[in-house]
Length: 117
Image (cartoon, rainbow, N blue to C red; front, side, top):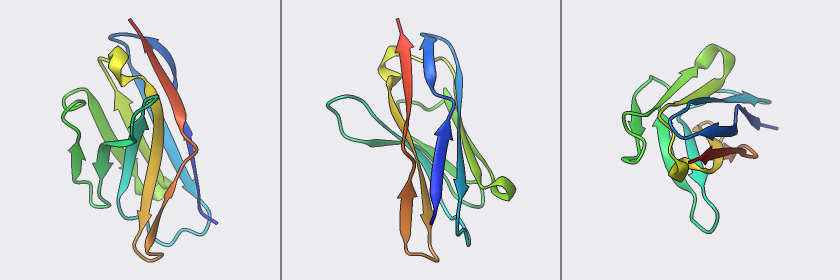
């Protein structure tokens, strides 16, 4: 069974930084794309950043220039460095991993990020 476990969330003041991590464990054959999503109260879950196995990335417009996604394929880990945080970044952040060999994706349980003004 595949499991994704996020860590690194917390409370930070506006302008501060946090680094999220997500470790994938279990019956792993090959992880393709990995991504971070977020969901604020009363809103839908939206993609924040995505990284392909080869390293190409894309970001939502709201975080471009402030967030950086990276991955360590050897450790089956994806990171999200979040700088210049704003109160509107407050949300539960979820890790997502797509496995083409399994034909499906998996989600982590989420980690809360709260940015105070």
